[in-house]
Amino acid sequence: MAPIGKRLVVDPITRIEGHLRIEVELDDAGRITDAFSSGTAFRGIELILKDRDPRDLGLFAQRICGVCTYHHYERSTEAVERAYGIKLPPNARRVRNLLLLSQFLQDHLLHFYQLHSLDWWDVTGVLEADPVRAARLSRRYTERPYHGEDDLARARERIAKLVASGQLGPFARGFWGHPRYRFAPEQNLIMAAHYLENLKIQRLAAQMTAILGSKNPHPQSLVVGGVTVANDALRANRLGEYGALLDKVAAFVEQAYLPDIVMLGEVYKGEALAGRGCGPGNYMVFGFVPLDEGFWEEARYYIAPGYILAENPERVLTVDPEKIGEEVSRSWYSYTGDDGQRLHPFKGETRPRYTGFSAGGTIDPAAKYSWIKTPRYDGHAMEVGPLARLLVAYHQGHERMRAVVEGYLRRLGVPLSFFESAVGRTAARALETRLVVEVAREQLAELTRAVAAGDERFFSGYTPKDGEGVSLREVPRGALSHWVRIENGRVANFQAVVPSTWNAAPRGHDGSLGAYETSLRGEVIADPERPLEILRIIHSFDPCMSCAVHLIQPGGAVLGPFRVEA
Image (cartoon, rainbow, N blue to C red; front, side, top):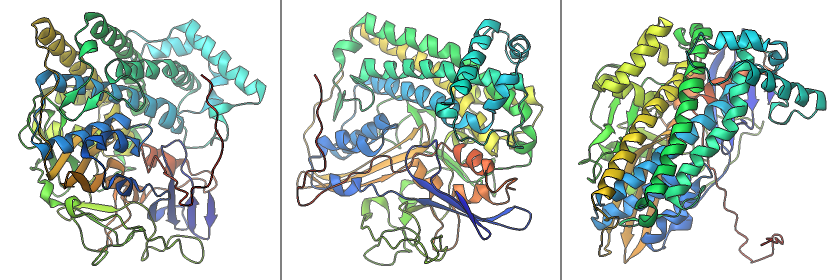
């Protein structure tokens, strides 16, 4: 990162998946007057998938990302199923939902503790903490703290050893001692202990995925028409293992994650109530956890699809996929026609046209500056993700979401507007995790009852055919859609519009800003050499950029020798 005149460049943004550059313009008071989001790695997965057998699409498309692997796998597989007209057996849907939910648990926990929590707690304050006082303080946030006095003392000792060794590992090169940190030493110790513990807990969630996904990352148990893990799903011990791991993860969620979010909200409520980190105010949801085998517009969901516009934030409107379009006026691509036109994904084009930055090495807002396209819904920039799901579900009257949200608001004594901030976006992800645990238990119980009753159907037969298919669902970071057109039995066109495309998009041809760029405007940077505020806001979205960069050597040259030991 480096200040350039009144332009501050942070490149790369760390503690994310992929490659992201953020530039902001500052006034004399350090206030951000403009912001630019640039994805700096080209993926090209759409080109790699062209002309392939559609039935192989999921196995390739899940390589879009090294974190969200299952979600791209499922979306691509379901897009082909839609094109073929296949409806899944109920048990196949339940298995897919259990895979989806285990990925949510791992993703949310890993994001908060390992990627985002260091924006809120100061590791240097841990050494000043008293484990006895920290244990007493933790009981203020929950009746059953995950860690007691001895556990907290051991965590403090581990951090002290890291400091003494001079090898700080993940805690190196942080903005420690920054004036924006507000936790007391004992609160820092509680967070540090949970950070260390989650290194184990998120691994348990990954094991849950492996039980029904064959492995993790990059599961391989989905096929067009159903799933291939009937033998595991039919065995009581395998389902029992999933349930036992779920209980362990749930205990950490209830006794550590949720109390930590209460503590975070209590300490940083001033920032939330000031709306710091608020995005465009437009929120969209594609449908969270399908509860039957219907196609997108037919299915029932745990959280139904819908969108909200800032002009009427309590009214949830119906999502129409035909109103989704992407433009490339500020993206390093070109369209056959005008780059400012919005192409529906079925007609989408992926034609790289890299022009670089301006002569001064910074972003020119009138030129192309990102490998991310600019999606719009009916012309509106949308925010997607846990905050969108929380607000859409709340205003839909979702009973469980309302209960969780209102309990949290009462605890802090704040209004619903608290959530439209970086703090609130972070809290929304945690509150959702409680619901994820509940629905995972319900889906596991349904699968267990169906299997016990003798239902062994996990696959639907089909006849391949040409056509168009789309899958739109919620994944941890928000609304994900895969679009495929099949001609002569091969993939003629494939487009993925991912959550971070919606949130991290550069501005449109009309000057409208995406969620990242909007959320940074108005923020005051206390120290331009240590822009903690930028990291807090951007990390609150849980960025997942172009996570798999595929390199090709057309001449067939050897790039490097590798030896794998058996």
